[in-house]
Image 1 (cartoon, rainbow, N blue to C red):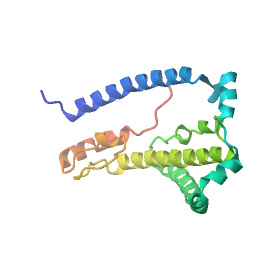
Image 2 (image 1 turned 90 degrees about the vertical axis):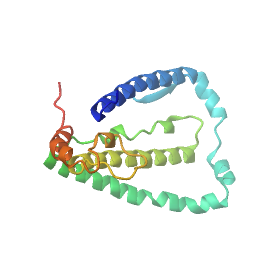
Image 3 (image 1 turned 60 degrees about the vertical axis):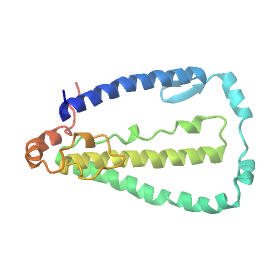
Image 4 (image 1 turned 180 degrees about the vertical axis):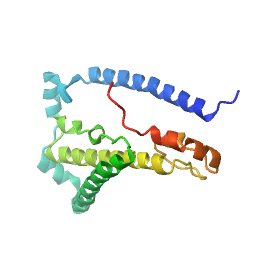
Length: 201
């Protein structure tokens, strides 16, 4: 028997919850394998592992020496992206603080998307840590902005495209089919209501 979209979405959510549990179990196995734990968001390696990691650390000057002239030449261009990224970060924070309040949309928690734990790896030198922090910031920011944009799209235009969309955000599957005017008018308010801030239990 063919399942409708609500049934398929429910099945997707159930599978996602099941896979999230499996993922957490696998992460726990990796913590045991590489001898570290998480305490209040901080990574804590066993002492013997920290000592082993330090033997794999390459000094910053040696790292730069082996980087190659072209890598050094393009690095200012790579790091210059921090300016538009920071501007985007501030602008999206302002946008969400003002517009989401006006429309009654729950705000995305920026901190959920920013993870800087790689800077705690003892085998990374100062330059590698800076690079990792930069990548974590850029990718975390893009994920945060994507979530803000997806909530905005769900509020204003929760309609699927006629053409296949690559790498659609998580909310897209619940949007109304392209060309289904009746369902759009009927479901639009429900889709908006899904975005309302949740009241604490």
